[in-house]
Amino acid sequence: MQPPTDNLYKFLAIFGLVMIGFSIYVPLQRLEAFSRGSMYVEVAYEPIIDKLVLIDDAARADLECAISAAKKREKGQVTKPDPCEKAPTARAAATVASAELVTLRAKAAKLELERNFLFQQYRQYFVMGIVVGCLGLCLCIAGFWLWYVRLQRFLDAAVKSGAS
Image (cartoon, rainbow, N blue to C red; front, top):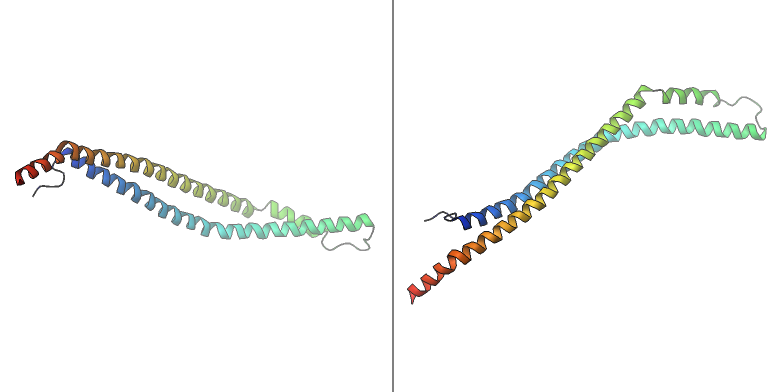
């Protein structure tokens, strides 16, 4: 019994099939790794976004209070000091100057960069998979065609003439 790569043409054809298989397998593995990494980024990103939204909501409430106080003053409706007049500016200043806010924004930016890197890496593997798959298909077709045209056709003719 002879191995399936008994000549160069069969070897080329089988190697082309292996290349096609790897061109499908590797991008799928990278897609799985991208999905896992993306889920990690989203899970890590969610609490950061929640904290940023809470800080933003507090600043928005301060701003709305300041706007309403200014409108009341403009209409001349202020009879006593508004309780939210002094608190918002102090709270807004503390929020803007907060080291936590700066840290959270830095973490969010880092996670976004990580997500972009994972996506670019997946896209590169996908393109490489397409290129390797096309090369494998060409190699496979060329190997089987050369094997049939240069060898197998003559062997089939010899077997047919020997059987007659």
